Length: 366
Image 1 (cartoon, one colour):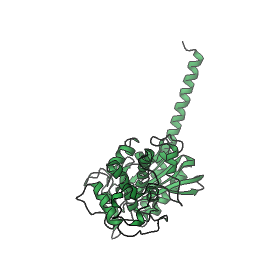
Image 2 (cartoon, one colour):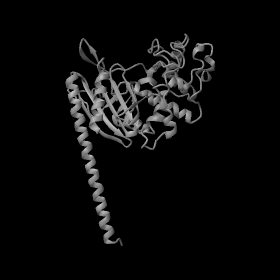
Image 3 (cartoon, rainbow, N blue to C red):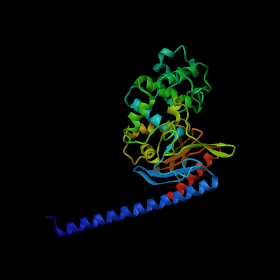
Image 4 (spheres, one colour):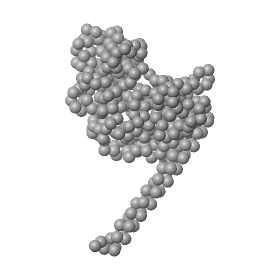
């Protein structure tokens, strides 16, 4: 029989835990309400269709809100559970996938392009022969920013299509000096070609198996969110004659490894939490994850690495856009925090709009 004093102690402890949990829930609700108000204000001021934002820590969402409409000219509202397009924020995911192969010793960061594709030695320009996997992931391979045409060879399977586009574009001398920074979507596709060759599996299937499934990112997929023609998910928007024009499209599939993932903010948070030191990683280990954020210059593998006073030291960031959406995130490992903003539109003002909202999230979080 449990002594009465023990029963009273356990009851009191349970009550205190419940009260603390309720207080935390109220704080989170308060932050979400403040985010919602900030989103509405920004949408009204900047005349954009919609926006979503969230604050996360190593356990997941702290606060989240959405405002605006899924499609301009339609009244259906964006919800916090809706899917968003990540654009080049996909690169951090692709780099993590590359790290999985490095972890399994099937390749290493110093493996060169020509070591994986010796059969292409006479087809690829010598400038690229010694380009390493790490150089590709950090935009220092000398490869041009983009393919001359991302939409060619659509009669081929996606793996063969990527290799063929790689060959088409690496015949000529390098666009930049190897070792120097040159942001390259084509470089990320080339890195993906290396692991596609080794695994005999497409980047899309590898992402599902090694990133999405282990992290339980059930909403994650590729291309424009939602089914064509439906308004069950947000549409992207571009400016035409000063007005927002809804468009449900995306970059060519071949560009996938550089920027074609979509998911909910809740699922994006599961991936971002890998870079928060309070979290026990679901995939890889802390040492291997930290390798991905060791920059050459200011850019690491899918992350811009810099210093910010508000973040108490090193912070990570990246933006992404397929020209129809704009996404931005900042990660502050020392604070165990990350801040996410996505708009379902893109023009010359979108970067500043998202950056301003990040500032508001940081202020709300204080």
